[in-house]
Image (cartoon, rainbow, N blue to C red; front, side, top):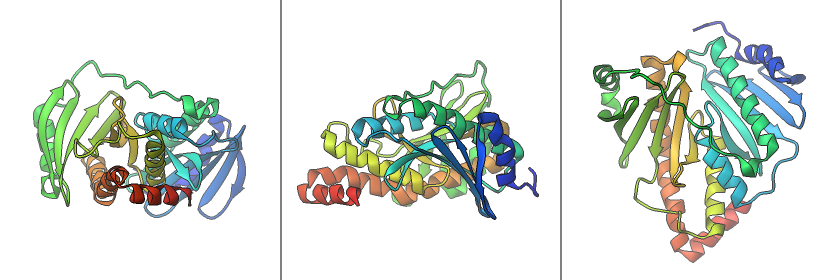
Length: 291
């Protein structure tokens, strides 16, 4: 950790590696340009935030929103969102414990995924998660990790595979299944946010378009966490960070971030899904999505 790190300056030092040129600056922000894209970097006392906006965004609609959410699930350190009415690409990292390598990783993430998005947002495909060939953490090590946060509602439940674990988080209103995976490069949390309580997959195209648009708006509001769609088109809450920064402190920060997002958004998502059963409320939902 570098206590005197200026994260925006660290971002500026990395930006040129990915063809970003200086565009504008202020006290705590910088903007950069490359062909068809603008990179915004800013920092406050809690977060480093990067966003990429696109000069020529794709047409709105279900193919675009579904593609962005499916890809977000495996956009390491980054996520797609909607800022106002246009898609954008975001990355946020907590300032506490932030180092120059974290800033470099963040710039790399938004630059690489931004380049892919410029090819065609409605045709994005999820990135394959490479498996580690050896076990990275034993059961006793995982028990010690979860014991340190057990008083906040977290409990290790079972081992599902070589580097895949099932945990439980007892939230304010209900219990969540949490799946934690490790690769040689990444730590990856995934929470099925509906977890069998409701389903949206059999609902109409118009409603799913509205729902997915709302999820992308939530991604713009949330820090670090993100909503995505898994291979079964189920809604998942995801958080990931580089394995090189793994430790109890970062692990605790990640679980705190997930807890905050479930508290704020899990019930909202469930209500949104169930609104489709009420034509009047669904119409209001559609109207709200247009505002």
